[in-house]
Length: 366
Image (tube, rainbow, N blue to C red; front, side, top):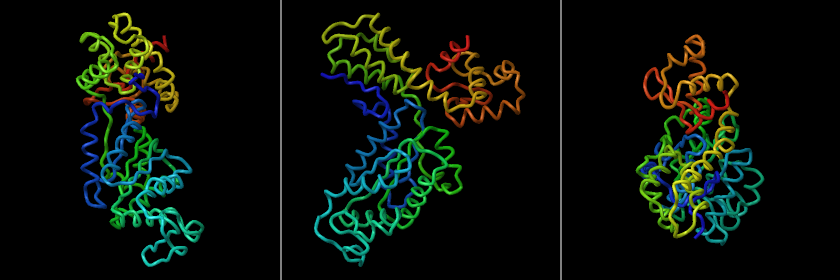
């Protein structure tokens, strides 16, 4: 059996762990009538929290319920990719014979064959008209359209065009839904865009750490299927090392499978080797990209937070250590909160949300 664990970013895991509630909320949303606010979903999470894997699962859930899915990564070519994806994925549901669309003959305003646009449409009409025509044509065949956008980027004209088009089509009662996923600060900037304020009404899924009981259950089943002999105590140790982080769940599981043999008992040394190998990959895969998006002063403040210890720390201790004035510190506190790198579990407290980042910052600044 191949390795059940897939730690590469953007890859699909063997199973989605601990996101049952999020998936159920999504399913209930797309069951709503066209135009309902719950048909728009925003997924927020740091790197490694499973945003892309969840998008893949939501696409499958939607397809099983009569939707044609267009899954794209945010970028300059996103709108063209959405149209092409719908045409390719939806073509199997449409007859290839010539057709008429809402009073327009084939070759005029509509399609020539199947979901292929007429030359008139291709050359003279934009994204909104094309998406409208596709929604209408698929609706005639009992299908809806769902748009899934990964790695949302703020301050983008194409993002504004996509969002405003969705708003118009939803308002017109088209059978369409949308899911956008991104880093917390990127989604926050999108929500603050004056053109995109309607997204503030969308359902928001914040990808929090997985419960350790869910990870224990998954590890127990996965290692059994992989024919690895492992004790309950070893599974508990591996689970605790993930700190509820989906990417670490995959990394640690991957190294357990790679560093052990089928049918043989896993040693405690093997457990620690798998954990150490996984933690070593965090620096390049998670820590460096996360810190790259912060300013030098952001990192200085974050490092000061890290120096106070693991878990939640007191703001008053950070202020005393940093020697910053409260008003000056609050600017950086707000920036770090918006980025999702820290959270405030209680008033007057801060905690670094990325597993092992505090230890890394303390070690890098010795």
